[in-house]
Amino acid sequence: MSERDPGLQPERTALAWRRTALSAAVAAAVLLRTGLVEASALALTAGFGALAVVVIAGRAGLYPRRTATPRVLLALSAATSLVGTLAAGHLLWR
Image (spheres, rainbow, N blue to C red):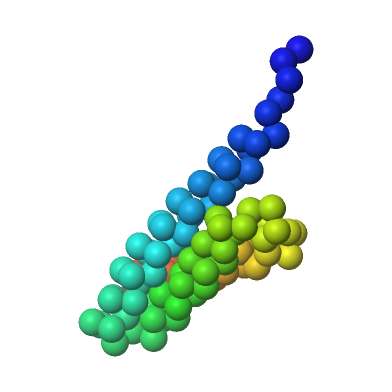
């Protein structure tokens, strides 16, 4: 049986959180721009929600061992669900 290196998993986890933060930042920029151009409160709310995802995921990417607690993961899941619902609502009712 091979010995497992405990140093690699936290690094992969941190990189995954950083990718999540980057994709949420792109989504936030698109939603905020759309909200400003079309004067849509729904898109602006979704954009600010996506910014919350950026902050939470970015922090988890910087400090993976200290930040990725169940409470933080629940907050990230809730913020992501809210952003997705608001973005879908914007697309459906525009």
